Each structure stands twice: as C-alpha cells, then as structure tokens.
Length: 178
Image (cartoon, rainbow, N blue to C red):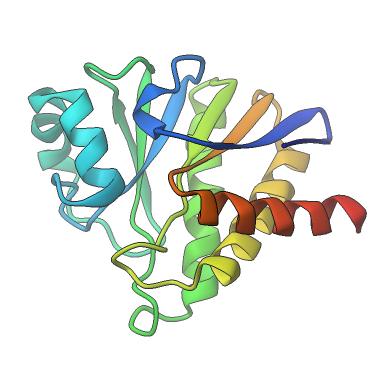
C-alpha cells in the first residue's frame, strides 16, 4: 500500500527489514546498549556483521525516544538509524517517546541527505506496545515529518508479520481518508 504526502511516498510492505536493498537507511528497534538482541535488533546485527556492534559501543546508552545513526556494514543500505522506543507501561509519556523515535530518525535521515528510510514497528515486540496504538502514533508522526521533509522521497514501513501489516494498512487507510 502506498500514499503520497507532500511529495513523499509513504509505503507499507510485509517483509524482512534487512533485505530492503533500495533504501538508504533502515531503522533498528534498538535496546539501550545498542547491542544485538532478539527481534529486529537481532536480525539487523546478524545481517550487518560484527562491525555494527563495534561501531555502536561508543554511542550507547540511549534513552527512550532517542535515535543515533551508524554505517550499515554488511547490510545493503548506507546507514542504520537506531531508535530506543519506550517500554509500554514503564517509560512515560510513552506516546510522546514513541513519536520522538520516528521524528528523530527522519531528522537524522534528512540531515544526512538521505532520500529513503525503512521503519519496523517500533516498541511493539518485547517492549509490549499495543500494535494498533503504536501504528497510529507511527503513521501520524511519519505523516507530519513527511510534510516537513526536504530530501526524503520514500518512507517505508517494513512489517514482519501479516497481522502487523494489516493493522498498519488499516491505520494508513484511515489517514488517507481524513
């Protein structure tokens, strides 16, 4: 599914974020120490190789809502933007912290002159954020940032599960009608 917002294509796909060969940057659903873990962080670190973990050491720790950028190492992209989303029910205000992740990632991409970026569903896995609530925050944040973007022309949500894809599609469809 695709939607145009102020000249930026907002796109949804179901797939593997580590195989997005046409994106300048992919976003890692990072942990505070920027180390390999499970889920998206584990997949990105495995695909990027040991150089990513080495580069991340000096950038940690992150606080919820923060984002930093590294090289992509063995990934097919130029950069990885690492975001620490909030743990649902622990890090407050969780909605503002989650929105900050998306906004800061887009700002880092813009500052680096990138034209495309791919996001997973931040904070919805081990961090426990309800997917529908997280999708609404993510899509609203990205839509706002797209309206202010100067360089980005493609923002893609790469959703691992069919269920996550369907939830994001429904939220994006509602945005498209508004």
